[in-house]
Length: 300
Ligand SMILES: O=C(O)c1cc(=O)[nH]c(=O)n1[C@@H]1O[C@H](COP(=O)(O)O)[C@@H](O)[C@H]1O
Image (cartoon, rainbow, N blue to C red):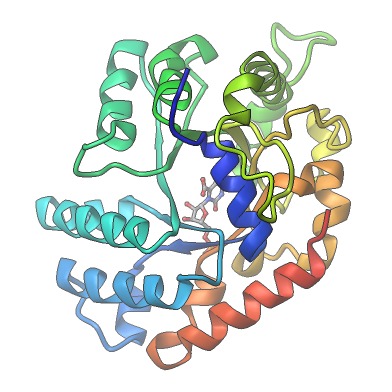
């Protein structure tokens, strides 16, 4: 069992302190141009460090989307190493949006890259795919209990073209949908590892209660009933939810409680472009205003 605070405990505490906003750092070419920065690794570095500055003490987490750095090759990875470390040093939880998945032995290497303490890319959590089977995730799951790390498994993603696959039923018939079965596996894992979730819970500071270290990605653009996901069937510990789809993809904050029901308690509202569009002069204010709005509108 881990002797460091679990990811769930840390998430519970940052949500208690700062609310549920997670700012996605996605240095699109068009955003770099709008910020007056070159479309290079150096431009992505400058952009990311300014966003991190704006997020410190305002939001729960940041989520760099690795593809926007990977497009610059090794120079992009050097930038990632620097910005992940900078954000973590300043108290932000870093969710590496890498969406990795493979056979278990290869997933182990991905987990070593993104979750192993001391790795140059060490983050607090990573997004991951269970579409090669929940059992392929044994090694990253081990990092949640031995090193206080977190995972967000893709379950019902925000993009409409994923619906057919994620709503499909296991072996056809009346079995659960692919998405619902991932949610069920995660809830079961968190219940089975409840003792780990309790490690490091700060009972005096603000928190949202006991939160598990393994969560799911559920798009805010979706009707989760169509995936047979009962959002009011949250267990103890609470299951973290990473919820992209607000802002640029059209989901409204005022609908968050209806969409996520009792799961709202440990839901991170994730937004990238809608915040990043503010540009270098407006980013500090944009982050503050959005974080305030999330605290006001998304309450458990
Ligand atoms: O895992 C994710 O973060 C993710 C899952 C999903 O279902 N949908 C989704 O949009 N994302 C990511 O969330 C971010 C959304 O960006 P915006 O639409 O600009 O807020 C992008 O970096 C996506 O890669």
